[in-house]
Amino acid sequence: MSMVRYKAIIAYDGTLFHGFQRQPQGRTVQEELERTLSKMASQPIVVHGSGRTDAHVHALGQVIHFDYPKERPLEKMRFAMDTQTPEDIAVKQVEIVDELFHARYLVQEKVYEFHVQIGKPRSPFRRHYASYYPYPLDLAKIERALPDLLGTHDFSAFCASGSSVEDKVRTIYEATMVHDEALSELVFTFRGDGFLYKMIRILVGTLLKIGNGRLEETSLPKIIASKDRNCAGPTAHPEGLYLKEVKY
Amino acid sequence: MSMVRYKAIIAYDGTLFHGFQRQPQGRTVQEELERTLSKMASQPIVVHGSGRTDAHVHALGQVIHFDYPKERPLEKMRFAMDTQTPEDIAVKQVEIVDELFHARYLVQEKVYEFHVQIGKPRSPFRRHYASYYPYPLDLAKIERALPDLLGTHDFSAFCASGSSVEDKVRTIYEATMVHDEALSELVFTFRGDGFLYKMIRILVGTLLKIGNGRLEETSLPKIIASKDRNCAGPTAHPEGLYLKEVKY
Image (tube, rainbow over all chains, first blue to last red; front, side, top):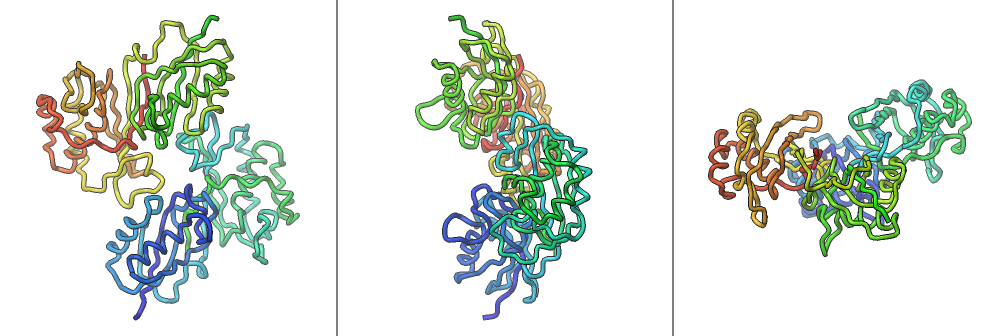
């Protein structure tokens, strides 16, 4: 039987997931997608994501691909997937791609957002959707530090232990912060050719430490050069992180 | 011992609550507040709310009062209450009021918001925070119908059965709808001197039925005059409803 390769853009609320990638224990996004697609196809379907996301991390635009035994009208396929997956997964877009497409191998860029609620009290509505920082922050210091992240660097200092990746050189094309006053949140955006294990969360933890005055605003080049995880700041909580877009 | 009366403004995410009011079964906001305050005071404290909210209904500005055995600095009191209540309750403001203040008896106006997500797919991030309406809507029809709700009317047609209230005359001062395009949501605001049991949810269910063309846009005066619940539309889901403000 000839299979058709589909690419899909999905969103998920990571609150109740142990991350994207299938694992022996704990509910995962991949497992829910595979369960739905296998039922629809009446045969086992394997889902490939653009990469994993950690427990409680969200996605606005995760990309997956899978091979399916039938060519179906795209909106029908999207609707079936969207309504048959649990309500914390949404299927935003489906297209048919050629058999050379691969959701992980062909990634050119990824865009992440990180939300930090500031001010008091912590909003009960944002407790799963933004990390919380109640301490004083000089936003100008963070803004002056951000451009130091741009370009191609060995980001070993911003990689959590437990990563098996050998090459820790990555390129960051965009690193910005916007203050959303209505939500009382800082929204960080990072665009790059790829990110290391927990890299965005360590970057944000370091930037907040700079904003709080416990690290110099000029310290990022030194931290990068050290290649030492102990020189960077703490790892920000996962609930503020969103995989926003994957580009091919 | 002389008691001090406190007024507090609280917010809560209603998702995991069986409403505001204490009841034998199910977790409630009142019970959580009373548990925290009684522990802080080392004696039983009774909390009075401005009114009940149903299961899964949210509050941005519910008002409570309670008598407490000690006068404490207000920010210390707010911080203690906020951090000792569960994270789906936030204590926004605390003040000391005279003993004649009563959170329920002295209400002058209440303001509610109702959020309806439109468009596809349903956002996984809004599933607990907005009701969902995926059917066609002519927003102009809803806008033309809204002013018919203003003024003083017997709203029996918009009161769910099970209410023990005898007088069903209420005054609505404000009834508006805004289309939040970024969220793809309609935000209804209703301000009045009080609302009947499930009244806002039935109003929204009726307005959506008008927008969908299954009720005439001029039908509200007739529905009000009928005093018959069966003439109005369905009851919208509770997760879209927010108690926004209580005025005294």
